[in-house]
Structures are given as C-alpha cells and as structure tokens.
Picture 1: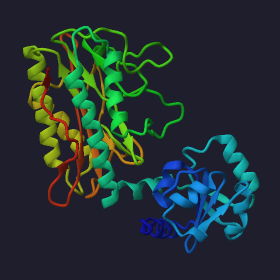
Picture 2 (picture 1 turned 90 degrees about the vertical axis):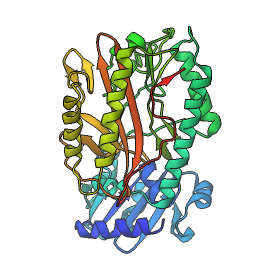
Picture 3 (picture 1 turned 45 degrees about the vertical axis):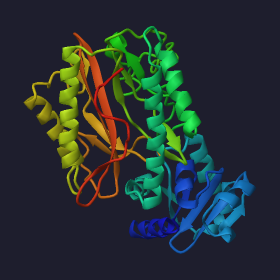
Length: 384
C-alpha cells in the first residue's frame, strides 16, 4: 500500500507539478489508510499527513510512517512544506468555491491545477487488497439477495422490501453509506421499484430509479404494494471497509409473463456477450457500440437501455471501488481503454412500455487472459 504514495509522487513529477494537497476522504483513505479530517501534502520526495481533528484515530489507523503524521490548525500550516511559487495539484472538481478561495488566500504565491484526473487514473487498477475488499462487499450484497428471496410476499410494499434488503446488508457489515463524486447527490439507499413504477424514471439517476416516497427524494422505494407476476428490480449498493458493491437483480413473485422472460433472457445474452469482450486495450466506447449492435441483432433496439417515450441511456456501466461510480465510464463517448485489474459494474436494462422492465448488473474483474464475475447472486430471472 505504501507503493501508492510512490506512484503518486512519480505521476506528479511527470506532469510538472511540484506537489499536491489532497483532502477528500476517499483519497486520504487510499493513500494513508485513514479518513480522519486531514490534508495530505505530497512533493516528489516527501509527504505529510496534517490532521485537523481525530489525531488519535489517524495515528492508529494509518499505514504510513507515524513520523509523517502531524497535528494541524488549518491549511496555512502547509505553506512551508512546499517550495515557493510551486504549481500544486488540488482536488478542484470537488473543493467548494469558498474553501478554494480560502486555500488560495492562505497559500498565496502558489498556483493550483486539478489533480483529480491523475488520482482517479491511478485508482482505476485495483491491487490484491482492494480486490479482496470488493469481494467482501459482494458477499454482503448477496445477503440482501437471500433476504429478498426469503421475504418477498404479495402485498408487501416496495418500502418494506427495501427495508428487508437494507437490514440484511447492515447485519452482514454494510457501513451504511456510499460515495458518489457529485455534490447534492441523492437516490435514497438505492433504486428499487416494481410493476408500473419501473416505467416512471426520475432524472436524478440515469437508470431505472423507482419513484421514491415524496418529491424531496424522487428515487428508491414507494409505498406501492407488490403484486404477483410483476417484475421487481432491486439496485441497492453496499460499502464495506471503504469499498463498494453494485449489483442489480430482477425478481418476480410467482411466474413471470412470457414477454418479461424473453426480454430478460436477451438482456442476459447481451451481458454475457460483453463480459467475454471486456478485454485490456478495448475502448469503453467500442464495448458500448457492441452492446447496442447486439441488441439490434436480437431485435431489442427499442427496449435496450430505454426510458420510454424515445429516451434512452447511452451508458452501460462504470468503474467501482472507493466510490460507487468511478472511471472508466462505459458510454458512447468514453474512449478510455480497459486495463487488467480494473473492476467494472456492467449495468444494463430493458424497458417495454407495454409490459414492464428488467435489469441486470454485475461486477467484472478484468484479467490479462480472462475476466471474472465477482458478484455472487444467481443471474437468472428470479421467480419466487
């Protein structure tokens, strides 16, 4: 894990940055092992963790050398750490404007560039510890699936089913939160919906959303009662030891209709086809093109990634790790290439306004020679 810091220092030098200041909790966790409120100051030859509060926790949790951990009264304490007039990297995509203005004032004489693309690029490839933690998160996710299978009953509300799922996740070790790199982001604890609610998609998440309990959070479960024969989609993520799992399964109480079964079978066929072709050096946009071409070949162009009324999603997946949604983005405009060691959430659905929607999402570990599904729940349409 200490090698992560060395790679960061090398990348800073390669981009003519004399240093960087990181304060986002997920980056702190990645480079130091603690998420306590801190500033991580890095140069090409040195680094220091300047802790604003929670010093006892930071010293106990961090895997970096203890003599690199210092108390801090504010960002002005970092001024002498860097050479005068240095060009410093900062997380400009997520620092609030007022905080950046304060940082610029207290660190006058320095120039700032956005370091987030460099950090996110490093975080794309997962090391063995990260993969172990992603597997552990997938095991927690599977407990939620088992709870759905044992608990889904006619007349149960979406909210009650969500509560059963979330309870199983928490009891298995879900930390109760997830991270998405967007300000003012919300989607309840995760999308879930049934029947006609699957045809009503909120704008807050670019996928099947559910309708929520009120306009204050129009995504996730509602108080609608679940009926026999209608599809139920559950897409509630988890996080354990800082790492996320994102899995979607489609359920039907009793037997699914012929149309739903056929649509799900074709969706799974597309997913299986793509998993085999998600190889190192293949562009994300190329995989997206293959997905839509395969849907057309199956006669599903109008249903694949549809939101109804002519709307559709151009994204079929995303990276996952310390954040629920990370680069790369698998979209028509995502020209980044897959790399061995990446973990991808392949996230696709089909929707037909006449009879409903189905969805399937799995996490795929990309290897040099072959890929591995690390989500654990059965991938067939689940009839209960």
